[in-house]
Length: 509
Ligand code: UN1
Image 1: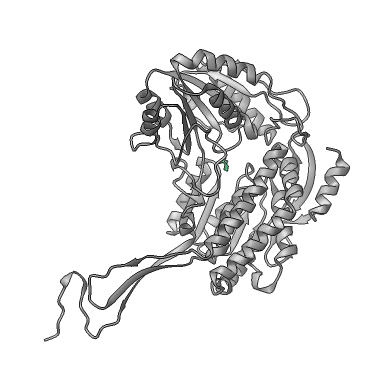
Image 2: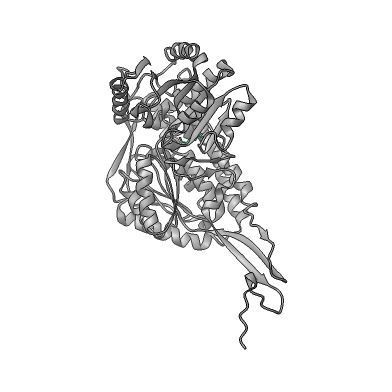
């Protein structure tokens, strides 16, 4: 894409040069160091933003607390109406915002648009939810007593997002938090600041009325320090963080020390099991999207392919052929399926993993190299390994797929569960017994378990997240909203006596 076209896009989205990266009821002066955003497909700068200093952040946290006092009083369906308008605005800006995602993080065009669609879906979901923040009525053991629970707003939520879903994961959190009555303080990835500024611009243009001041806030950072301030800040009762397991451990420890709440969505090491009865055409297509899509930079990316020994050679042959013909290149071009990695550092980490595979006795079947061209392009890589190689236990955020074989389903499930992470998993089978075993309590130990679809590309309607080192959080659909509210159990006595629970007697003689 020419410089002129990308400048035009940035102008349409209202992103000028030297954009302030602090927003709280309007753009505010930012006093932290500047940050340059790079187009990973060219290695060239896209724009420059200013980041938040400690004082800037404190001002935002303070004001979001004041906004909370107003916002929590607004009836939830009225808050839902605001989120509905946000969804409408995103629909109008879908093309431009989707293209910006493509330019700033290198996702192919269709995935950039899909990311904005995920935001829109989330807004629709949260709008409906705003009329369904139900509590239970519970049978009281005492006469003339009524017991029930209700859900109240929690307070400002700190939202830390990663580069790979630079806008959708904000929407998972912000749409739910907003209908639940919580303002949001957003710290996006330093690798995707323009996407965040563009979202905040849309909010500034379309949701600027007084009642909304301080509800959707932004603080850009150039490093991890802002995240540490947020984790330690009692003004943010919930920190929702997406990123590496190492980041999650540090955030969790800091938030736990102040007895705050965390919602963590950390690394995955996702596996697909292909059984003897699998539809191999279906499995092949699913594996390609899950392993190569987003250049292997989703937390749900397929990293381990477990093939039954009877289908292994056929599948490997077909995969090697497919890996050799995946069109890679500038992600804004319609025919491209594989864009760049996010940075030079990501390329180096991938090449180090490829070295480790060889040193540890694995075999590279396809790919394994960077492409000699501007930007951060690598070949999609297929490696045959034993399941117990140390490198296989690690999440390398790149398109490397580890292929291994197994004899029976018990063994496959043991391999699938034999890593520290527990995000997503899938089985390809046409046998109901195999599918049900995989989904049973003794089956996959992941937060997501699929049959005959890949590990990535979840819909927003389900709760999203994983177990073990993935952090245990659940975001987006189902009842994930409960994390953003505080539960209150209430008992009302409408009688004239005071019976005590458990039959306890306490009569003053
Ligand atoms: C992530 O990679 O952080 O299921 C989230 C998926 C997407 C979300 C991925 N809907 O792949």
